[in-house]
Image 1: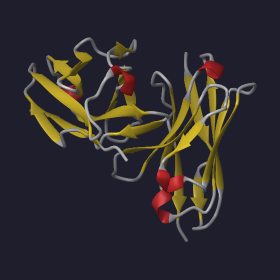
Image 2: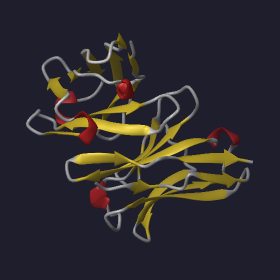
Image 3: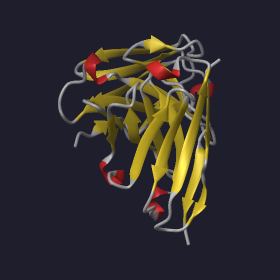
Image 4: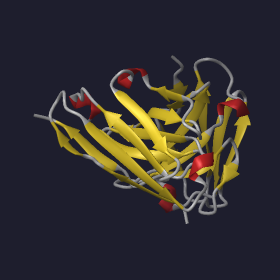
Length: 113
Length: 109
């Protein structure tokens, strides 16, 4: 059974940093593209970043470029999102999403003073 | 940057058929845009109904199907059930990046 478990969310002040993790199991993680997707309260889904299977290619939505870094550890079946210079508008539930469409349950990030 | 378009809202009668569409501001949608369709109910994480145009997961009800038609990706719901009332999002790939549509609120009434 495919499982994706996000962790690392919480309350952080504007300008602060946070590292999200996504632990994967039940599928061949090292062969899948992986995405981070977020959903602000009451809003739609927004793609944040993705990374190819071996970590050699990555892309970001314009609003997070230079502030967020996606990474993966295929030996540990883990995906990460390092977030810095956080803003109020980054407040959202963050999900990991695999190629072919497996979702985690999400982790809430709240940026507020 | 490309914009992905969906109908903001649709209504379908129980047992009826409805078509949701997903377009791109850059032109016609093809299989290279790897269309996905997701369903989200209030308070729940999204779940994938269709991936890469027309592929279903084991949990996808048979009444849902995905296709390409008239330059758009299409999600067809045949025989709507009350439990199908939800928000539906499409996703398109543009090169290495990904974009979601704004979502369609489907009412079964």
